[in-house]
Length: 210
Ligand SMILES: CC(C)(COP(=O)(O)OP(=O)(O)OC[C@H]1O[C@@H](n2cnc3c(N)ncnc32)[C@H](O)[C@@H]1OP(=O)(O)O)[C@@H](O)C(=O)NCCC(=O)NCCS
Image 1 (tube, rainbow, N blue to C red):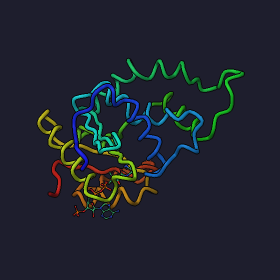
Image 2: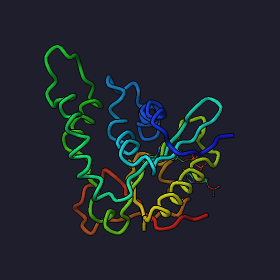
Image 3: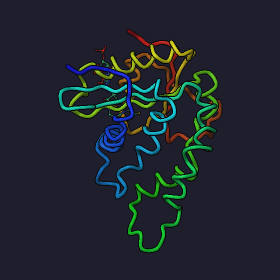
Image 4: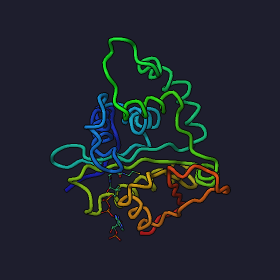
């Protein structure tokens, strides 16, 4: 039996481990990175650290095996990270590696680019669905209804905190997650302009199918 509970600071290492273990469109990305912590720096840790009340984990007898983290107000969260999260990481991972610091993989470089040019939700999801989230389960918990339970719990928590809707971005190659979001009743959000980049598929919801 897996239980869903609030995040505590001792879970941070598990969040980093899960982020990379599920970071290649839902599959293990560990082999692609030299710096295994990079995905967690972008997609997990800042949410847990700056919005811990909106961070949930799911734990079974082997330990923490999934999380759902997010930001209540995306448009306030982004400048907060610009001030308090990205600058230290930009120093730690310069765009041009210091001599003698060893090789970097293409995946390392791609995430380091994001650290220097932080991801920002486009206006069309962020205006109407102000919160956003990331949900990730280790393989041992997938496909048993835990994603539904975790997303529902996160949604209820965010509503209790005043959220009027949430959005999320998914890699188009992550067809399993796309099927999950559709099954959960999220709407695909389309940009107003056809020239918008299509490297991310955006979903949003004010309510979930139960
Ligand atoms: C995506 C993820 C959170 C889904 O969680 P899950 O526990 O596997 O999904 P569940 O078993 O709770 O499925 C919930 C419902 O969605 C449906 N569903 C799940 N995946 C589906 C798919 N690919 N196609 C159609 N329906 C799907 C299930 O049938 C179920 O329907 P039901 O409740 O009506 O019976 C989980 O698989 C995961 O963490 N994947 C790896 C990380 C990842 O890709 N995260 C998303 C990044 S954007």
